[in-house]
Length: 422
Image 1 (cartoon, one colour):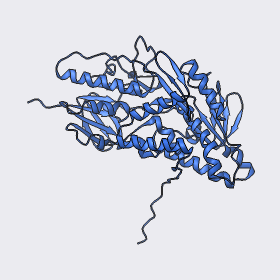
Image 2 (cartoon, rainbow, N blue to C red):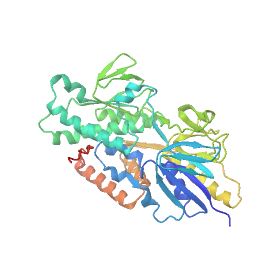
Image 3 (cartoon, one colour):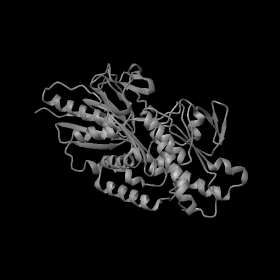
Image 4 (cartoon, one colour):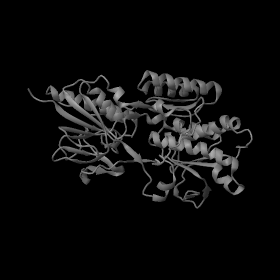
């Protein structure tokens, strides 16, 4: 009897998790590798950072997802390198052999080579980073109470760099916190001078979306008091001063970097398989060019098609669809059926700016306002994995909707173990 083929999937993001789920109870041995023991729902990360949701609401334990799986196994490890000749994945816990390898570990924050910005700005690509940012935001409000006049301006300025969905949604959430929460939490302090800047290098915020979405999102942000600066490039940040290409300087202790992403580098991949943004070049079947039995899906994959000559957008819907098609192709392989090429069918895009303020682009029309806001909430709730998490998020959203408040503003800081006194 022929032994089952082994598939190793690196990364439990949208692509890796979906592929693992679709390969459950097939005649493949599936090993899912990730450095965390949970899947994180990135679209709602900004709500953790602004104390609207608990981290557990957007995190799903991998072993819970695959509790009843007969063929999917999980290992928590750092992937160190791959050997595509010997078909081995080297990790921090062991070396694993594979018949097929799928790289799905996504991307990380892109600082465009600026080490100073990387050192001082706050990223928001993971749950620990979102918790770190939440602690920083809440601590800043406490610091403002006792700050001397020279420190106030830089503490009162929050600068968000990047006008994509993450930047826009975070700016809106901070603006609503300023309006609805701070006057109640700090009645003895005037926070009216707290300023939220949203800086975007291109001409528009939400530049990939429709003209209507761009226009309305800016209107909504400015209605909330956000200072929106487009065609604005940040050249440096030293922890105190944001230096713009125009020469303008914004004093700020808090800079949140949402200006772009770049692929994680995996040692062992030939340089000719890597293209701009550190993405891995794949064909229409998500197979990595010039490598045997190696695939890449999700944000890390760079596939050119007639519809998308510059690669697909790095969004969850692409990652999920690529995983579905690759899973089907693995199943086709078991029965000797020809694989199917991948083609992305754009379902649209959306972003929320605040309460009853959102923009939605569908393939044939766009809309905004209250209906768009409810649509955004419904779609995101449906994408959440577990019923328990759906209910938790829904209850938090409803409480926030009716009270303009949340009960989650707690700072959870790490502690150092004290040495034993022997």
